[in-house]
Structure formats: C-alpha cells, structure tokens
Amino acid sequence: MPVVSVEEDPGPPSSVPPLRVAVVGAGPAGIYAAEALTRQDDVPVAVDLLDRLPTPFGLVRHGIAPDHPKMRAIRDTLHRALDHPSVRFVGNVEVGRDLDCADLARTVDAVVYTYGAALDRHLAIPGEELPGSLAATDLVAWYTGHPDADRARVEAALAGARSVVVVGVGNVALDVARVLARTPAELEPTDMPQHVLDALAAAPVGSVTVLGRRGPAHATFTTQELRELDELAQATVLVDPADLELDPAAEERAAADRVVSRNLAVLREWAGHTLEPGRTPLRLRFYTRPVRLVGEERVTGVEVERTVVDAEGRASGTGELEVLPADLVVRSVGYRGSGLPHLPLDERRGTVPNEGGRVLRDGQRAPGEYVAGWIKRGPTGVVGTNKHDARETVAALLEDVAAGVLRPGRGGGDDLVSELRANGADPVLLEDWRAIDAAEVALGATRGRARTTLHEWESLLAAVKEAAARAR
Ligand SMILES: Cc1cc2nc3c(=O)[nH]c(=O)nc-3n(C[C@H](O)[C@H](O)[C@H](O)COP(=O)(O)OP(=O)(O)OC[C@H]3O[C@@H](n4cnc5c(N)ncnc54)[C@H](O)[C@@H]3O)c2cc1C
Image (cartoon, rainbow, N blue to C red; front, top):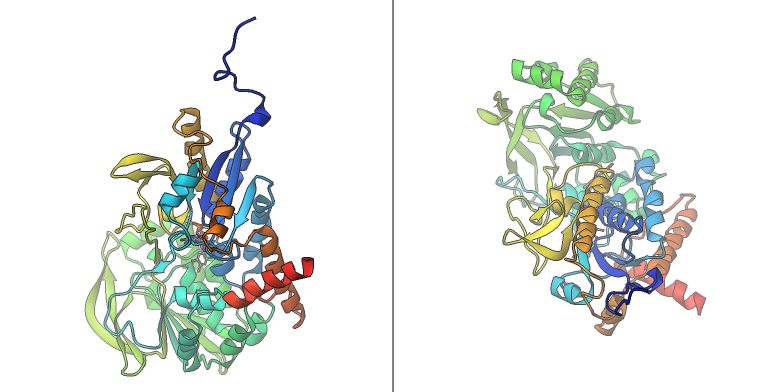
C-alpha cells in the first residue's frame, strides 16, 4: 500500500474548503458570473454577490424601460442564481465606501468586478448644464425609481416640457422618447413609482423630436424598438423622406447589415405619415447635430446644424443652422464606466483594463482579480450578451485555480458579512430583498397594479426592518 503524506492527501471532497469569491455588482453580469461559478463541479465555491443597492438586477431594474414588462421579467430567470445555496446576496454595500478593493483582496480568494458603467457621456456644447437639460441616465434613473435619482431636478425639467428634444439614435434614446410620448393610461400598468406616473401625466409634452447626427443607416437602434414607436396610442411618428435618400456608402451599409435594411424599410413606411389633429408628433430627424442649447434661466431651444456623412461614416457640419424650440433636452449619447479606489481604469474607454476578464495592472495579470459585463467590455449589447461575457471571465478564473494561481484560503480573512457589520455597514441579504419585493407587490395592489417600485432609501430599508420586526 503506498504511503501518502498528510499534505499530499486531498481528503474527501466535502473537506475541501470552498473558493471564496466576491462578485461586485448584482446586475446581469454579476448574476451570470455567480451562476457560472455554481454551475461547475470542479471547484467548490462560496459566492458573495455585493451590490450598493439593497435590490439586485442592476439595469434590469433601473434601466430597461418599465413599459417593457416582458423584458423586465428576465429578473425571474436571474433570481434562480440568487437562490443557489452557494450564493449569498449582500446588498446595501458599496465598494469604495463600506470597503475597498484592498479589503476584498485580504478577505476573499478572488474578486469579480461587475459594477457596470453608470456615468453618462456629455455633448460638450454650450448650454448643456442649463436647467431643462438632462442626461438620459437622470431621466431613466428617475422613471425606474432608482433611490439616487435627482427627483427635484428631473421633475422641475419635466414641469415645463412642451417641446422635447432627445439627442441620440440608440435604443435608450427611443426608450426615453417613447416613455415621454405615452399617455397616462399606457403607463399605468407599469411598475413606475406613483410620483413618476403623476409627473408624467402632468407634463405638457406636445412634441418629441429625436436627433441623429448621422443618417438612418448609422442609427444603432434595433428594428423591434423602432417599430414600437408606431404603436403608441396618441403619437404619430414623422420622418422626412429626404433623410432616407442614401448615398452609395450608406446603400452599401444597408445591403451588408440586415438590421440597417429592416430599419430603413420601417422608416420608409413612415415617411408618408401625416399628423392628425390632437396627436403628438414624434419626429425622427437625421443628419442633424446640436451645437448649442439656447436659454437664459432654462433651456428654450436647441441650435442644430445640418451635417453630411462621409464614406467612413464621419459626420461634419455644413454650416446650415436652425433653432428648434425645446423646453426639455435629453442627451442619450452613451454610458461610460468609472473607477473604484485601488482598481485600474482605462479612462479613455471607461473600462477596467483586462485580458479575457483577467484584470491587468500595469499590463500584467493581477492574480485573483477579474471583471465582467459593461465595466469589462464597455456599454454595449443586450442582457444576454453579459452571459457569454461572464462565462468567459469565470472560465479564466477556473483556469487560474487549475494552474495553482488561485487556491481556497488565499484571502484568509473572516466572513465578509460579519466584517462589514463589525465596521458599521448594514448589509441587506436575500431574505431582506424578498421583504422589499413583497412590499412593492403589496404597494402595487393598493392601486390594482402588479407592483409599484419603492424609490427611496428610507422606504426600501424600512421594508426590511418591518419584515424583520414581524419575524421576531
Ligand atoms: C436605459 C437602458 C435600457 C436598457 N434596455 C435594455 C433592454 O430593453 N434589453 C436588453 O437586453 N438590454 C437593455 N439594456 C442593456 C442591459 O441593461 C445591460 O447590458 C446590462 O444591464 C449590463 O449589465 P452589468 O451587470 O454589466 O451592469 P449593470 O446592470 O449596470 O449592473 C451593475 C451593478 O453594480 C452595482 N454597483 C455599481 N457600483 C458599485 C459599487 N461601487 N459597489 C457595489 N455595487 C456597485 C450597481 O448598483 C448595479 O446593480 C439597457 C441599458 C440601459 C442603460
């Protein structure tokens, strides 16, 4: 019988301590990373899924438009990963405030950063900071009930909003245009907070204009999202047929890309629309870029310039200027990621430098640090894109375990939640989130709705405390 030393004997599988992994951000990328970690048998894991909010799901809760209930229902699928016994949801904990990356490195064996890309990009034109000028991130945070939304600023901007201009031709721009053009009856079945429904119902929106600086062949919206604009109860989509005349480069682009050719077919159907009295015009204007927001106390208009687009798809101004009336301007020109203390950031791209999900520090792989989702690849793709992305990252992590770069016990610290509590943080766990969930459903029921989103820190945390008090 061979003699096996104690060090060499791996022991029965149950005695192997799990690899302790902290995932920072419980949006789709974080949840898919947790799922990928628990769906393999090679390495036992214990995952702490941290989020600064007391609620999971990231932009599925605070991004996807509330009038897209089927899309928002993806949270039911995401919830399955949260229910896994090896996954612990730890909400109300912000990395950078309650603990930092160095604390995490000391406590757990590996960290997967999935904290998204929440900052908005600017137009960098005069007047952009005037009251009445908002980023889509501000408006979306408000209408989805994000507890950090600047309610006073958004509602002040909406209160006088007759003519709305939305800058940008991606899906988020269309979400914003659609939500603003909907009737109160169309929005009533959503889970928007009541004050959002009330403010939107009271806003005097009489026209919505969406601006694209390039032509329709360069718009990034998807055909399904585009088509929906024509299904609104009170709004009529208007498109200038002249904007749909394509140059040879744009024709080529349309021939090569099915989404572009489908979008063009939809836009051409609409080019014949006329506006009936009493309906809200929802104009799509291409080859138009804003050069200045006009106004003294608040926005009263947008000065725009006609553009031409070259064969490489670059837009340049023609000098042909015009002022469009606007009381509310919403810019929707992209998101970007920000840094966390002690974590590298590529400032230009707004992402954490990485190689297939392994964080790079000064160009070298940082053992035990990984990244997935928008903060890894930038703000592109749909929810499902993050699944493949998170799997790639987790595969890299597991390769590092197999190669001996990572091993259980490497972090060596105490239980993360106990440490957080000892340091004065107030983590919200899965049963607490269930209490918030139940409180939202109960609040919705008081008005015959399936759910009403709790939008204040106080009410979210009160739901947790009330449920805990009832359980005692
Ligand atoms: C307005 C909007 C509408 C969209 N609509 C759709 C749609 O209809 N369909 C679709 O498929 N896709 C849609 N998307 C895209 C989709 O939401 C993203 O692909 C996806 O959410 C990105 O996932 P993520 O996990 O990388 O980031 P996020 O979803 O942003 O999740 C990041 C999480 O990290 C948390 N966090 C941030 N900082 C910290 C910190 N310091 N400490 C702890 N936690 C932190 C945040 O609270 C958040 O929960 C939309 C995106 C936007 C912006």
